[in-house]
Image (cartoon, rainbow, N blue to C red; front, side, top):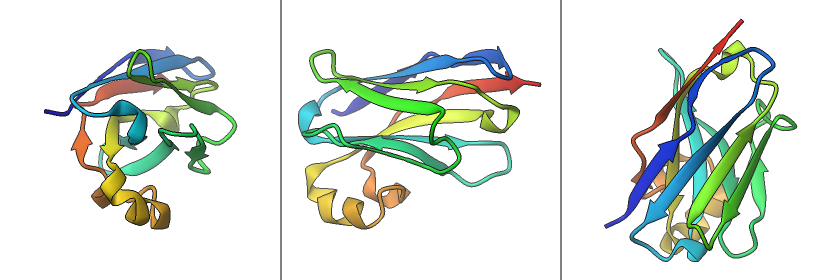
Length: 130
């Protein structure tokens, strides 16, 4: 059974930093894409950042590029999202999700599409005060 557990959320002032973690179990971690998504109250789910398993290549949404950094530690089966210069607009629940190798072609076409992700964590709240 795939399990994803996010941690690291909290309350921070604008300009501050947080590091989110996504601990994974139940699948061949190295083979999977891991994505971070967020959903703010009243807004659509937004794909934030993605990291490929085999070569650790990364993608970022324009809204976080230059401020957020995604990384993975395959030995620890954990993906991190370092978030710097946080702004009130970053306030949301942050979720990590997995995209399995069988979804590779769909993922290449639309890496931010929620339909290409198989499993999701429970989310962690990030609140940025002004």
